[in-house]
Image 1: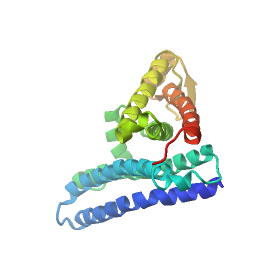
Image 2 (image 1 turned 135 degrees about the horizontal axis):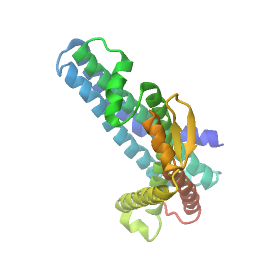
Image 3 (image 1 turned 60 degrees about the vertical axis):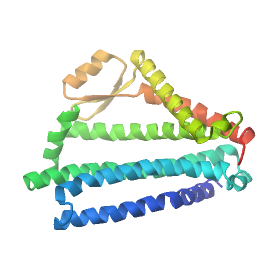
Length: 276
């Protein structure tokens, strides 16, 4: 049953996001013509606009999937959704997974556009470019070490960002659900937005505070092997030696709170929510 729920939720969200990507493809097509023919905006300007359009699509996608949750759970379609013979936990999990999937796809497209734009602009300026040389130029600017270590670190950071997306979606769904429960219902969508920023800020603040005195770090050594430490001196030594460290405590704490907030949200859906 969960598989069928997820399939329907992905289809439902696609009705909101398909227009975004259709418009994005049209814009990208026009810009790609400029890149190939040097007609219109010109190659360099077109390359810079590509990631900006993708970023706009990413932002709109986030808004679209959250509004789809609000509409299907608390709008006219909410009567049908809440009569399905499934538990509120299954219903909420399906919608969270669907939203996470669309946000993740849009995020990957945005990152790929930024990387492609940087590579293309450097190729315009310098002719044929070895991609590893491009990384060697860019990575030191953002505080990363060698290419091999940096690629490994970026993969680890990508996983960390995926976990952050889960936290992001969990807080958003809780905020939207709370905004449809008395007495918070009178504040509507504005109340949901305020609640989201308060909770997200609180999660971040407390996670960072815990990490300041109990910080588990993923170590990536110069030879790209892994390790873990809670000793700041060991972390500094690895970085000085050409490695890298990634703080894990804040995101682990936020994931734990997300489980709690998920359970609370499912309980609210089961017992307290008001459908318009």
